[in-house]
Length: 129
Image 1 (spheres, one colour):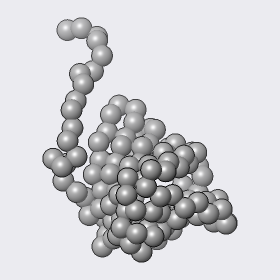
Image 2 (cartoon, helix red, strand yellow):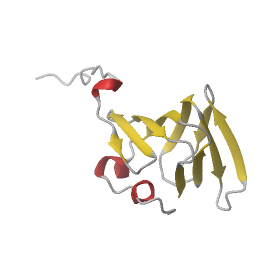
Image 3 (tube, one colour):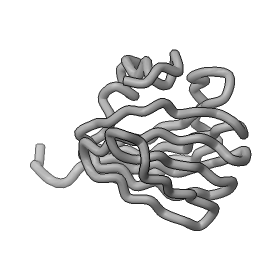
């Protein structure tokens, strides 16, 4: 047995079942050893409640638009539209509202353990952390 790199894995988004988190939000996840990528589907008016995490996050909007509120007091606003990328540093409180039906790609380093083990109650129950 050799100690070489892990084998490469090819994934197809359509082959991954959508996980329904609530009436407005669904997602698909792909996880590597050190990173996670997700497709997140949010209906217009859907809310991601205020939360923070130790993971660095990059959000790339494929279609639609999200209004992010950033900071402890949620006073910094960023409108992120199709083609835009928002980088959220670790521990930065943030929330989001879908201004349109939206598909976004979220990339996390390290992977979000709460997303993997189902303890992400802020998304499932719609309650800010």
